[in-house]
Image (cartoon, rainbow, N blue to C red; front, side):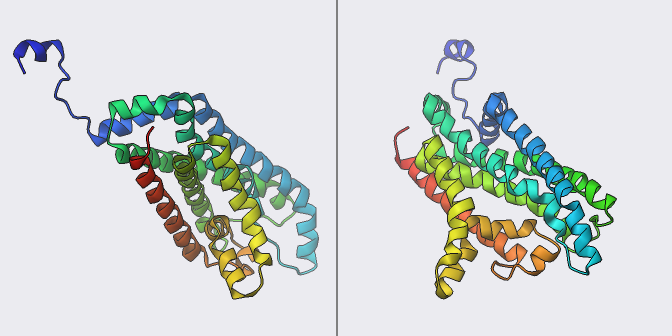
Length: 275
């Protein structure tokens, strides 16, 4: 290459490194309006639901305590099990499916033809962002939900057995759900399809599997993504009586393995299929 050509195009011969790929994906992620609003929904929606449900349940918990019945402290995190799960999963799906629907994926692959690096960069960014927002949301749910409970002398505390694990575990679970959504988005390349299938697995099919008789039904119920990963968000009486699911960290490990397997399949298909 001549000096004249190099001077005219100073980037000629430059190979985009992985750091550049991450920076490019970060730019795309933070400039898409849906990312901001989905994260806002995750935080505000989850916190509001936790507060409202705890307000509604505080009197009943107080009666249970007076009657000597155990209560379920993890009700303070209930918002995460509704709005939080949905928002985290949908964000993961839209991170890639939106690029397919707009044709932006072709531009991305022209700039960075190394497809696996794009997938890994997206997964890392999603995991970090959702973990940070999820952790802030878990603390907000815990603190806001505790206000009406404490007013009735049935409050929760960070020193309660499993409470700290449940808070950090909630952030880890939401982070994993976003990667689960990303993997299904790569597999299906269709926003509505990926969202429908994923949320059905988490909220509907995951519960229906317990109706299958025998040991196979019990095993299948345990390994469903929402059941395996969600156990890490529970503490108090709910965790003690959760004999139908794995222990918190065991279940989360199963969930992570499922997500990784799905992501690997997505990466293989991403390499083989046309954009």
